[in-house]
Length: 416
Image (tube, rainbow, N blue to C red):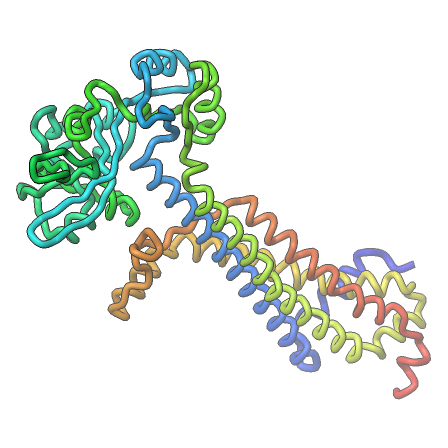
């Protein structure tokens, strides 16, 4: 009875190159390289999708709240009481009143529509990260009665304004005058610019003091709603709904996961589709293993016949060729995982170097919402990719190994 060490020795020997078996070993090397490259490409693509999602989530949470509680009529009744109840919940770090409305900004002959957000500087710096992204000024410059405004840098470029310039804010509500209904207008001074890295916000968001916003939109002491900052951003859907029910209902609630659900859902769908598509490349690499082992079986039919004549069982021949194919799959999979993680960790630098070399920018922030190509390797993806690739390779060895095990001694020796 042939022992397992013999089967292991036979399987590994066919992987080593000698003068007679040089071409077969070359085919094995090609199979390993093909599997390595395909696994690395699949892992890099998934890492880029993970990095894009994480970076997008981080930038969204730096300019928007985790959740918002708003009144159904456009204003939040008894917002001071709602704020006290919200702050009593252990999940809530801050509950910030705010005013938000639409407006038109005009500077010279340039006009742009934007969202006006009335905030309190102290609360804004404590709750979200946008205050640290302001250039040419500070969030504290938005004092009540100053009628100052902080613009996104893309919006400021579109209007052609810089820090210190003035512009006209036109509210959509009109005022009745002897000449008819005229839009409500207020001259504002640009006290700063911010850059969030999200084109959606840098192009269509402007910050003013909450008191000034309430005066422009004639809200008095009322606010549009409360913005909630939570200890765990992923609990936002549950916490804001429980808070609304605790206050007796009759509120409009939203959270960052729902406001950007389509965006994150499209990323997940794209990631799943890319995994399936690129898995076909791994399958093609696995087919190379089939071709390599079939050639080995054909070349070694005499050796197989001699082994069978000496008493080797079919299962031993099957195990020997299974060892060879499995080793090819294992080496290619591990090599691809290491190469994929190495490329993923250095991808941003490689892209920047290529951009400097070619003089072209590959990622336009107006299209992709960011100008960098982040990559983040998740171990769950590594295990999924490596496990799937190894299973495909193991399955690819079955037919050649079964064919070798079924070869009869007389069939292998008849040409000798």
